[in-house]
Image 1 (cartoon, rainbow, N blue to C red):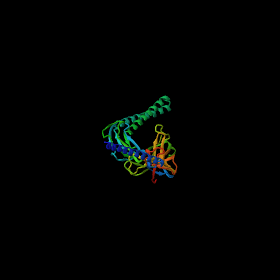
Image 2: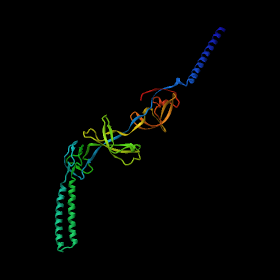
Image 3: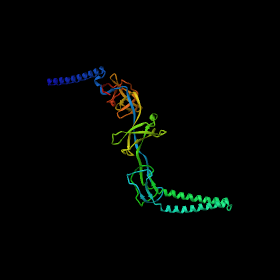
Image 4: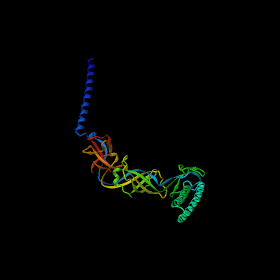
Length: 354
């Protein structure tokens, strides 16, 4: 029994000694790691060395295409449609007759008005002769002349109403779908068709107010449309004279040629607006920027440790961002793993070409 107890005691002592050895060994490793500056726990990250470069400053904006001229065709008077003289989807010339409203009643009224005008004119002529012979007073002559003028005005009024029964194209362009037929009774509220001129298209877009001073009339812009990589050009011809208070943006309009009819009104456009060219600029990848409450920050590597730097940025392109302040040429900018970094975190940087 004594030998059995002795064996148990030796096993307990040996197990305790093993545990004590492991604790002392781990503590020794931790002390060595601290003594070596924590190199064994450094985080692997990638980075670039910032440098000065020429930056072609431009804004990427959203816009929409609009017809150069467009109008909804309606009749100014009510009546039965006697004839339609255009085809849907066809091109029409300025002044071309598009449709005609029944004017029979107006023509009859015009004949009556002309008869009254002729009679009033003859009465005024006779009154003038009588006035010269002092057979009537000046007042009687003035009344006869006033009746003549009234009759003339009535004739002109009816002629104007008759002219409204023939609706003509106000400008050359392409006509769309029609919504009436011959025999339809129309009123001024009835839409007949739409007429658009798409030989040229307007592009309307808005820019942030801080770039307002860099926009000039007659400047060229490029744009693309959805589903196409082809670039089109346009020229700025009008700038809103004030900044919109609600959005703090300035509205700009450009004009693009569309002789081939490739572009359609209402299409969404991606506008590329060139600004000034910045020399000695520092441009960084967008993934290196961290938005924070007071602005934006980045991490650089300094003496093997991550350092937090606040930066001021400007124009953003697809994958890069122009930095105005906070970085200088030669800084090692960290571009990966930055969301896990804190100030003075040990880092091991793999430099990438930029």
